[in-house]
Image (cartoon, rainbow, N blue to C red; front, side, top):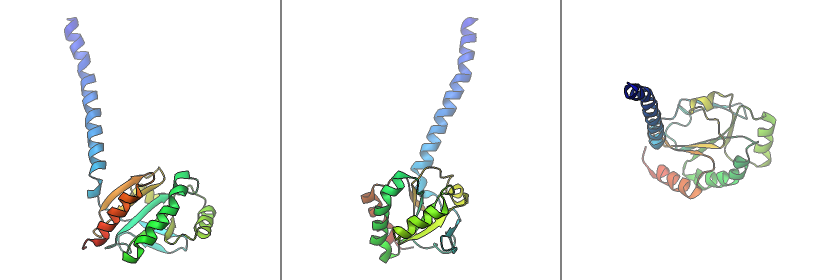
Length: 176
């Protein structure tokens, strides 16, 4: 009887382990095939007060959405290279929206954008855009979106810029 009791007590544990493994596989698949995701319909409020929408203003374009914060060391480290990337591809139609997180003080964001002469669009998030893009909490998080509105790549942390350049090069060359 003790063997039967022992086997029955292992059974629930087996199902828990199987559920955890299934969850890990599902999450891995989600991130591995993230390029198949459509970009959410999101509207950003730029520092100028102007609104820009993924559904209308950015539709049919290749663009980067970069969630960042002035308090994020990695964001500050990558920003000069983000500027270089934008400047390298803007003549081919690349759009770029740097979205400051909702906990970032607007005066810090304004100051940073002005003193660094950020050449791309800078927006302040009220928290809704971060939620729409999969509940972004870690900065920097950058999304590469193609002309069809598909998310080609999500970078959490600083991207490998050679890889990003290749991805943008290919996306900008493709026909919509």
